[in-house]
Image 1 (tube, rainbow, N blue to C red):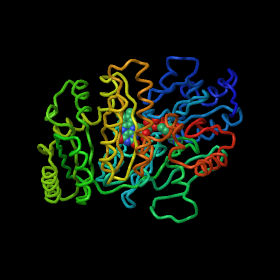
Image 2 (cartoon, rainbow, N blue to C red; image 1 turned 120 degrees about the horizontal axis):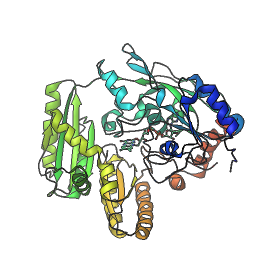
Image 3 (spheres, rainbow, N blue to C red; image 1 turned 135 degrees about the vertical axis):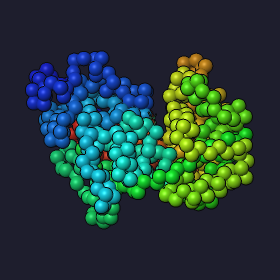
Image 4 (cartoon, rainbow, N blue to C red; image 1 turned 180 degrees about the horizontal axis):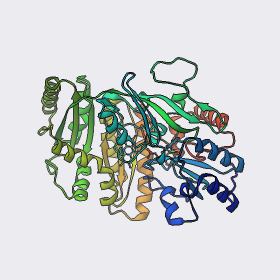
Length: 470
Ligand SMILES: Cc1cc2nc3c(=O)[nH]c(=O)nc-3n(C[C@H](O)[C@H](O)[C@H](O)COP(=O)(O)OP(=O)(O)OC[C@H]3O[C@@H](n4cnc5c(N)ncnc54)[C@H](O)[C@@H]3O)c2cc1C
């Protein structure tokens, strides 16, 4: 285990003098506290100092200070991660990237955007949309998460079904490794076969290999015609089985979200709102069709609706206007908070299986809930094989909750692996899943990862204690 030094008053003064008082927070528990946690809420550790770089050159300088003084450095974007990956468990410095948020160039000739990585996902999406361009990765936290955090976790989102995940949109990352090397592997182009792809190595590295400060992201033409369909099903099994069946029709739908009716019930209480069919349905599917040609999009939506009814949907609602869309998506985006607040506590997994096996996963998870006498509530992307399976505390005693959630989560991860899947599709490992990494990866694979970490960060300064111990 690596030993670290505490920040001395002398060092704090040096950092403050070098970069300016407005760039640092220290000695103020109240102001430091938000930087000691993420949205996972399971982990907390107070940083000794938060440093907010004002320009890119500050990053190299603070990294050198951390290395010289053997102080851990944890990079933080929007802090919306749910695995504790941005929690500074060994204290030290938190590098708050949110001021490095300039969109540098929307390049219409090469269909890409060069941006600093502290920019919020939705801000970037809106900026490129004004130019008729489209950045598809849309994690449901898009109002608060940064592009840097998205790259570091390889975030996905509802639109991954048609458009893929963050990995598919990163042409280049400007990053600095703790050993001083700079990565500028890619460019304003997609194709590269130039040795090992360092850009792809950094995607999903959870702040453990390098600090990113800029990126070039691929853009597409903006699909301005979008239709959402909501299909309630009386039977949970029918709704689950409809997913692979509808995907097999290859209609090029962009979103296929599954929402267990148990989740809708929490949402109704949380939002103080009523959703159609919430009393009759056991689950609902939220499907989106998008494109450039109005007639074509309408035709595909109609075909989808026919199929959903054929697969036993009780009804199909079509939302093409802004108000109805907002209501639908508002409910979907609030599910996490609804479960957490109305269900008193929750723990969610983001397992992924081949999409043909998604119904086995959803049905199997329910059985696990029954076995361990705990409420299992599922919702999420499903169309790409990834789903959020949550256990919810409700009225369990604290003791029961701790025991049952542990047993259920263990079984859910095992089930995903049994179905040829994996333990995380988009949230990453962080602290939360570190102890489960061995379930999916061999020792040989984990050792290769450790060797990579050792090569670029021999002092184990950058976000230590995440993904694996080292
Ligand atoms: C309501 C809600 C909905 C969500 N929905 C989704 C979803 O649909 N899909 C999905 O994939 N995730 C989702 N998430 C999880 C989370 O939003 C994503 O993991 C997101 O990508 C994290 O981005 P962030 O900027 O908040 O990163 P942070 O939480 O700040 O950090 C996450 C990791 O990235 C590293 N990091 C951040 N910036 C940098 C950088 N510049 N250089 C190097 N490393 C860096 C950190 O060290 C840490 O390891 C959701 C979370 C919430 C709370």
